[in-house]
Length: 210
Image (tube, rainbow, N blue to C red; front, side, top):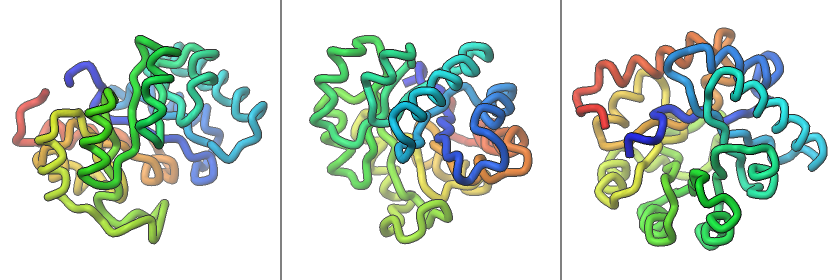
């Protein structure tokens, strides 16, 4: 579990105050941020590829990891470090394409977490933990008890959805390996300061570092 960074930042250009490239560069200048998930799934294919290529340059320059949402071919083409999937049935094909890549899956309940582990995912994002401003009405909040149960399944769990710097510590102490964040960082006037506040939760967490 220790091989995974503890904070995953998910991109959303529609919430960012500047370009995604600028946001990511500012984030990766901070010690607490070393893993970016390129999302932007609504972009036309060529535009999305171009943005992914630019982000690969940025993350390479600052030594950060880059994963791509949903598109394993794009991830492989740009030399990304991993892919984040919505369906566990896609894992086997992606593993054949990117044998050394990190493969994550979105989970929204304990059954999803179990299936992800059984199908060989490397980690899951579990959401929504709390009500989310980025996705209002996304689903009933799962809460900390779901993190506690998910952590027992034996796959790294990243808490996602409505997690703030203030609630981050509780998620970690409930058993989350780390945090996946999007809106609070993308919307921030100073993304670097926002990620430092999240990183501080690991220093104050009573659960030993993994």
